[in-house]
Length: 219
Image 1: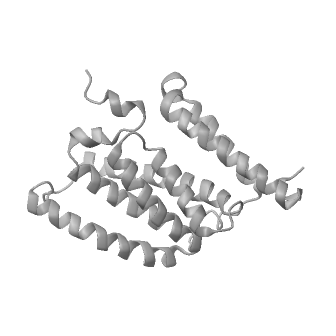
Image 2 (image 1 turned 30 degrees about the horizontal axis):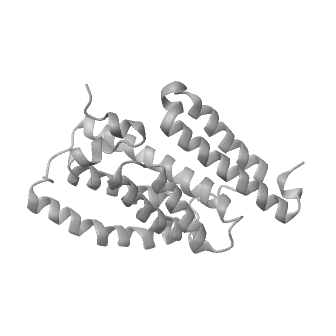
Image 3 (image 1 turned 180 degrees about the horizontal axis):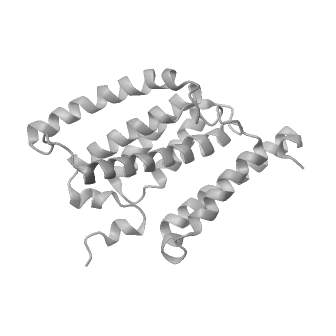
């Protein structure tokens, strides 16, 4: 039986259980499975992709097409510039940021990190937020829930937890009204580089989360 054929209240309840279970799996992977079963992420991703078939999701609803691309960019990119430009200026004034021509290694890292941010926005917005918006009627509440979940996945790193919770709420508010993850991923990529460049290594621990945050620096 297709999920859409079920009564609406039961469908919402099952979706809530699905979201809770999948988020628990994400936390388990961060805190345990990545060390004991490192390839289990393939199975988790397959399950997430399978839910799109069960729910009969459209790519446009998931924010993966060009639909609302410009509308989303017109909101999030000016906001990101307003926040990031003073930070960049402060970085130049303190000497933590310098002009330099990026080499191939830097460009490869940028591409890899950008792809990782796309993956995070897909999971946070296209999956979790899309599901929560079918369960929670208030868009502000669903955005807040996604922000808490996004930040919680970055514990115990204090800097990343704070930044991703705040950024997650802003991104979710934009996605709720203009469903497109690509400008969000671009904004996250730029913001992540700034956080990594300007935060002392002893505080951010090379942007590690989960148990890896505590193991940083141990040889």
